[in-house]
Length: 425
Image (cartoon, rainbow, N blue to C red; front, side, top):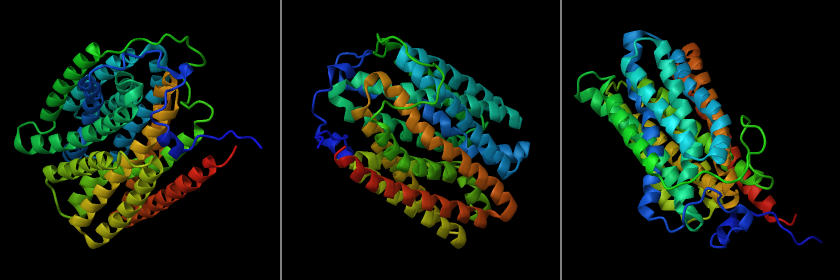
């Protein structure tokens, strides 16, 4: 009988301290003794771009009033971000692994700055669509190249820290954007302009961080197509599947809150404050950040299972909130959604960081995000048009029921997949 075994999620945990094979060492590697503060600073471009990713969330009600468009159109504007992101992921991971992190991150930050200008001057739906498209492209670059850069700077001995910081940088920035937009739009003149001026300053500081970041170009020769659906090396498919199974329902839940949460607060629950809607989104992603620090030392199977459970309860709370017109239940749903995304994201990134060769890591990160963002784009858009047709409570209930089922399936995939990869090959 063969004694070889496929590496399981728990085996990865147990072998965390083992040295990586020589063939897997980072061709773009900086010294492993890079100061820890540089690992934190390397995550700043991820945060800065993700601040932009959701900064428009509390402002859509203002653009709806001034420009005039339906909830269905609103979700299309939101979904163009997903289109740009997915298109970027087809290219950015591979390019980053071949040319280096900086040649991908610097153009992404430039697109982010352009999006700020377009958002600040937008007077048409077309302008909002272009700004969201540019934002999505920038985000696609940082979730592949930016997160991989954090791992490069951290070195092989700090992969778990790198996964934690990269994941937390993403969710913290995603939550900070709507909070800033809500506060600035309620307290300062030019409500749809000021936040993007502030964001442009943040992106400019991120450019400086990338220019000084201690990473080098990879030495490995390029192989294969430059534009392709991102994937992982043979043998890592199970790790990618386990991550997507939980990350996809989690990020779909938070996408719903971001795209239609302000509408729920305004039309169903009678709350019109942009500070409230921005604060709810911020609290959702603070939950996603905090839960990752809380569970970081647990086994990855436990983290992923808990993420699936959290998303399931989030959808139950959403259904209850729309039928009871309850703000506390809606906030509870948002917090649970944030925790579900956070744990799914951390579990998935940790598995990939620990098992994928560094020269394929950016592409692997891109593959995880493709698997997550496809349903995160499709389901909220479909729900927006469904709400226009059948009403907000019914549309939200159908969405919650479907996503609850996907979260349960994701949890079962984690349990079954873990048992399968633990058995002899």
